[in-house]
Image (cartoon, rainbow, N blue to C red; front, top):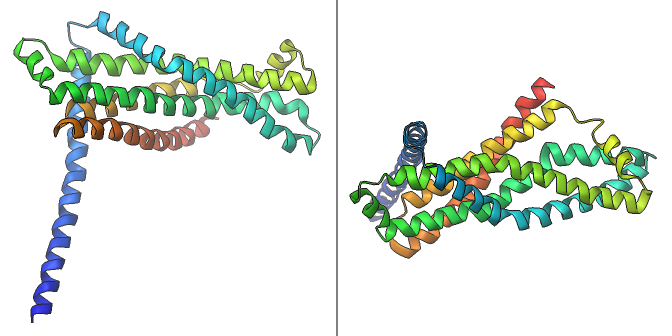
Length: 269
């Protein structure tokens, strides 16, 4: 009898935990949806915080530029070195510039840049807004008749959404420079010859898809970082949790978006 009561209690607790997890999941989706709707409502209403948007654009670019430059350059060199043996086996070394350029423009530049931005910028947004939330600075802004959502959230999401396409194009350029140096060192290919061969297989939809990916990724990173930070709780632990969740959610959603966008773009090729 006692064993049956204990088992019944465990089953009831498990059902409660499952039900709570489901409620939290759909409640989170609802809260994020409301957050995004509020962003668009505030973004297209006056006044626009142009000065803060420009400042945040500078912060996003400045924080990411050095790491993006180094990572993009190394990626171009490493991918070229890894691809050469496979092409050499078929006597197709002349295809190397086209292969590397297609890989960088279509996939590597958007993914690498967005993951770096998620780790660098997204975590910073979560930690910065989280610290302002737990120290009641956001509440103080509301009391002083300042719209903290427009000044803190809208400007950051707008800035990273605008800057991500620029950073991704820059990463692609740096990656191709690394690829050129490796190709020139091994095949003595001229710069003009490399450029002509590289862009022979690139079409408008490749550039457009990369810019579209960059915009989606930037918006995702901004929403994840600002949402986690704006609603942070439980003091310093909440700030750390907000920064961590901003990175984890951003990276997870970026890979989901990558899979969906690739399928859609391939349908138009």
